[in-house]
Image 1: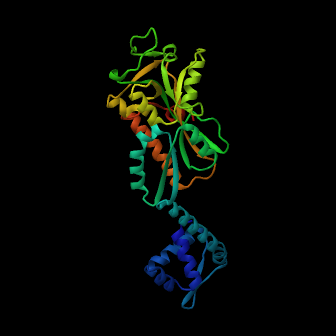
Image 2: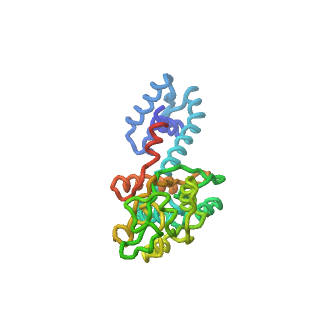
Image 3: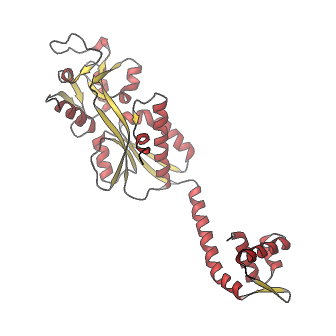
Length: 320
C-alpha cells in the first residue's frame, strides 16, 4: 500500500473534504484527488463518495479508516525509529587496549572516531591482558582487545588476528653478557637458546608470559625470568642491556625502527591471537561503530605493512 496515498485518504476522510485536505497538505486538489483514485484502484473498491459540498466514506472506506489510522501510526513510528539510528550516536564508549596494540592503533583510531562521531566520548584504558581480563569480568569496559583470553562469563570473544613473537634484544653496543657457549646471537633463536638467556617478561598473570612458558614447557625447558608488569619498563631495561624479552614485533616496532632494539625471529615461532571482547548485552550504536572502525583500521595497517599479523576474520568469512 502506498503510504502517501493512504495519508491523503485518511485526511480527506477525517475532514470530509478533499479541498481542505489539499490545503492542509499543501498540494493541489487535482493531485490529491488522483492519489485517492489510485488508492481506490489499488484496493479495487470505492472509498469516498460525494456528499453535498464534501465527501463521506463508504463501508470500505470506514474499514480502511479504522485500520488505516493504526497502520499509518505504525509506519510513522517505524520511520522515526530508523531515522533516529541514522543520526549521530551519543554517549560514552570505553575501550581497553594492550600497550603494544594501543601504540599502533590508538592514534589513528581516536582521530578517525572523534572526527566521525564528535558527540561520543571515547575513553581508552591500557594495560596488559591480565588486567584487561579483570575489567571485562567486572563490566568496566564496552570493547576490549585482548591476547589469548580464557573464557570470561558474559563476554563474547572473537579472534581478529594472529601474531608471531620475536626475541627483543638491545643494540649490539649494549649487549649483555651471553651464557657460556654463546659468543654472539645468531640470526634466528631456537627455544633451547631462549631458555639460556636472561629474560625480562610480565608475570604469569598475563597472556604473553603464559604463551612463552607454554612454548618452553613443550620442550621441557625452564626460563630465566625477571618479572615486570609494565611493557615500557621492560623495553627500557632491554634497551639498557639488562637482558632480553619476547614480544610481538608490533609492541617494539618503534624502538626497532630507531635501532635501539633488535627483533630476532624465534624458530619455531610462538604465536598468539589478538581477540575482540565485548560484554553479552545489546551494544549501543556508538559501540558498534567503534568495533567496525577497529576492524577496518586493523586491516589497513596490516595491508600497509605497519602491523605484522594475519587477519583471522578473513579466513573465517569464507567458511560462514
